[in-house]
Amino acid sequence: MVESPCHPEGHPRARNELRPIIKLRSTAGTGYTYVTRKSRRNDPDRLVLRKYDPVARKHVPFREER
Image 1 (cartoon, rainbow, N blue to C red):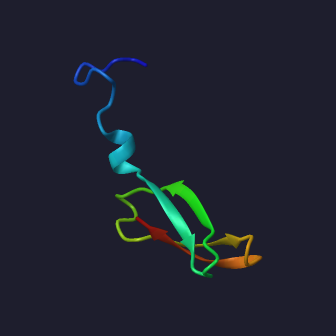
Image 2: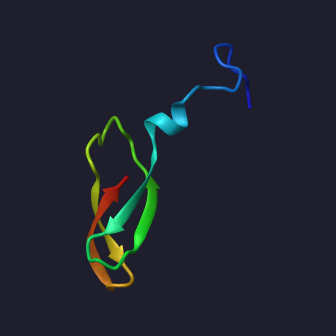
């Protein structure tokens, strides 16, 4: 890694603060989850995505949990 003159370990806080890791839990009640990252700048509210739930065997809304 190239050292930054302003911080000894590179760019400070860029990865954790700006794009945190979130869990998306199925609203079908199966307990199935996806893990992804999201942009806090573009999506400050809780994320809801329609994805495939293999337990329910259909596409359902997945809601962000913290």
